[in-house]
Length: 201
Length: 193
Image 1: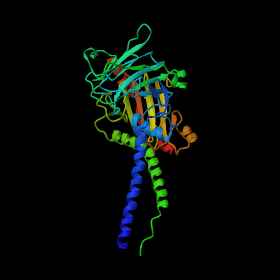
Image 2: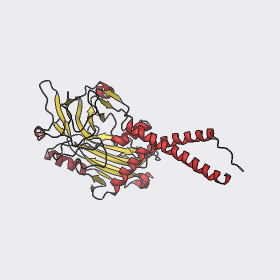
Image 3: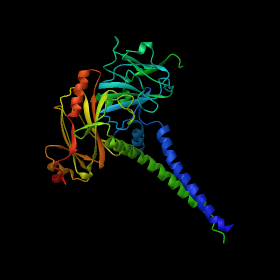
Image 4: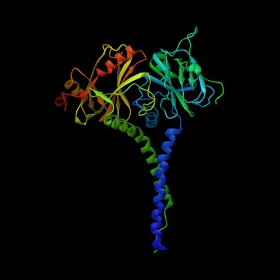
């Protein structure tokens, strides 16, 4: 009995410490991939003020590296992101959404659609974003754009971002050279609304 | 002889320490591993066009799957540097009329420097990137005439962004602008060391 006790004990302790390593790495990975990034909310959007910054804490730095590596600091660019619409429902690539709002007060802005893997949706028209140059403003000075699977009316429409496949989707609103008031209070931005149009297939 | 019974309290304490350490190590390592991979792949990729020490990736589309969340409205140029062999000199002279910026990233993924078309209104950039081991005051004298930038890490990368659209004239102008950037070992390194 005693001759086997020591190897069994070593095996048991090895297993326990291996489990501790898995638990440590796994909990970090879950935190990075499942817990939403911290930041300031504006409507359905969230902006992280420490993206790209040397002042970022370790968790923010790791999350940014995973989801938006090589981001610029807030004085250069503000990145508002969301994975849900105004009602809080998850954005889906197979659904159609209407984005509407006032052009953000920035030198240049864009809204880009990304698949759940954070890469661009494939489409033969190579249309992945809308921006101040591609949208037209209505009489009230508001723009509108559509994001969703391609349809007959989408071909040739510069304000339509075609999606592909099924699954999650993420939108990023980039503000290059945002006005000083927005840089000071990014949560005060009148962000574009995100509304689902029709039923999802 | 029976072995001594296990001291589970002591082991529980040790296990907790291991969990916390591995958690922290993972959080610390993720950005560094990602940046290392970006730098290694970018340095080794022979399929990308290069000029003047700068890599010129093709216009961004859905086939770009190396760096997450690429902006399809920007044309990029990159330079990967290692300061182990001396300072890096970056120069640019452009009259590109739209937004452009040059950002420097440490191997921790931090953006430690940025210059754009408004902060360099004449379209001229002349930087010398030095490792943090250099004395900043002395380096400024030794690299007189250039803007000295201290990199917090030995390895890093430069990323130039140029705002483009579908207008062919804009594309041609942006292409010329990114080809005017130079990123190379500083010829005056002997004076700097």
